Image 1 (cartoon, rainbow, N blue to C red):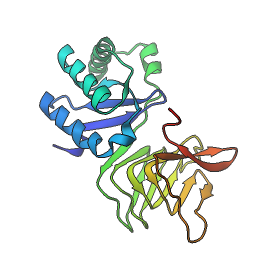
Image 2: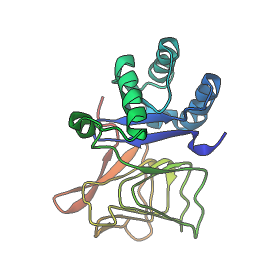
Image 3: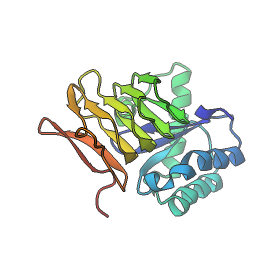
Image 4: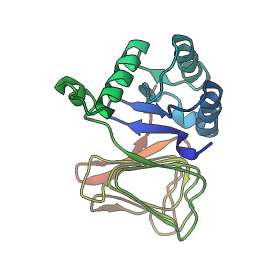
Amino acid sequence: MKDNAIVFKGTKEGLYIVLKEEMIFDDIIHELENKIKPSKRFFEGAKIVNFKGKNLTPGEYEELVDILQNQYGMQFLGDYDSLCRSTALSKEESKGQLIPEPVKQSLGNEETALFIKGTIRSGQLIKANGNIVVLGDVNPGAYLEATGSIIVMGNMRGTGHSGTQGDYNTYIAAFRLEPMQLRIGDIINRPPDGKQYKSKVPEMAVVRKGMIIVEPYLGKK
């Protein structure tokens, strides 16, 4: 199974889970487990807007929602009817037919992401026009550069630069945020000499009043 068989796409409302049309249902469950289980704590509380890309039966849909909510602690916002409408509209669009303006507006906050499974090692440079999502660790000496945000579902010990085209609304989040350097837009934040961030919970770096600050990723429950 290819790593991009299941893709998480971020929006301001939450995440969409995009499923390849040719995937069989058992493979979908298996791939979800491969992507989510290693970073279960990071996904807890995440908002899932809906699925995309594949027709699901009502039973399959309910089973996936149950797995995401009860096994992985996610919040599921969508419903089966909206999935069916979205799938039908996507097929019409692929045939060159016009899509009503309200549909374009409702999907206008979607963002693309480069999804990487594995460790980013020292000396490696990863660039993306969009977001970067790493299922693994980023070692010291590794570099991530994204026009969008950066999410590391492991230890972030390298250098991260989000919003490389000047977007200060982007962020850098990690299960363990212990970077050598963080940069959002042209604002830089480094640990004091000889020290690094030491986080015990998932955290995110954001820009507040012209400075980079680090705060809990999921906030207080």
